[in-house]
Image 1: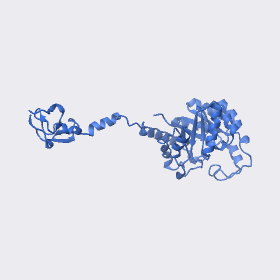
Image 2: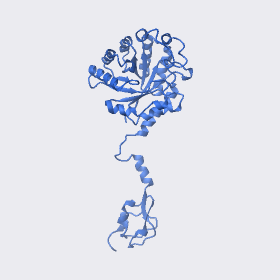
Image 3: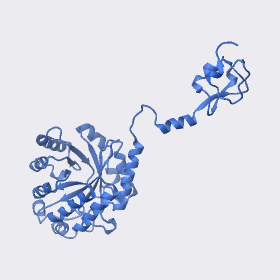
Image 4: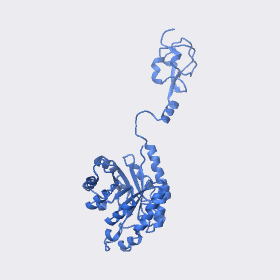
Length: 348
């Protein structure tokens, strides 16, 4: 079974400190994540200075100042991101980049990421989408808040640049922070896979304080999810940006462990043959035919002389009819296993 691709999403959890960003990358790698996903933003090209702040636009407790000013304070420079990318290469974790504007995309090319991520907020920027596609890298399309028509349009734009073999993964996930349990609608993963014929992953934003946050994403695995994305932070107790649905590195380690165990539990889904341990269980637990009483050599075996019991020897109860009406070749003790060589069908 192909392993689920686990993405640790950093977003803005670095709180503007490149050292913390590098620590998060190391923590994600140590936790067993396959990739770290970063958001690169050149604020003058991304947001107007008078963009309104308020609940739901930044993490709780950080909505008291203008959002542009707040993000400007915690934004990493391009030089900072070079250090982060170098750290990812150093620890051997894939780098996924979500550029939020044209300037960030131009810069991100030099980082040589393994893949690009497109926010659903950019789904109507067709030229920008095509420019990302021209990089020739796999693309993860965040589809939270996008309509089916918009998804179809974006997939068509990417394929128009790269061709029908474009490596596209749809990354489904409710985008409010934190997401209510009842809003996750995980079954959509299978519906999206069947509708678009593309790999589909789950981007989870459940409240990280809820123990179910470590379990809910596992529900997507039997529905065909090929990747799981989860927010990661350096220390959730410090309640930095994007903390609501983020796991600390030790929690992320536990999360990856649960994913790997879930994969093992799901198995291959094949009905052909029995696993070795199932065969052993079958041999240990199935009953066998034994003599219900002492039998003399030449004695006719009737229904009262045969019984099925758990035993290390004896034929399968499915063959009981063969023994009824046969004769014992030799003396057979009570509870001795009945095997085909101990009886004959011809009269003595």
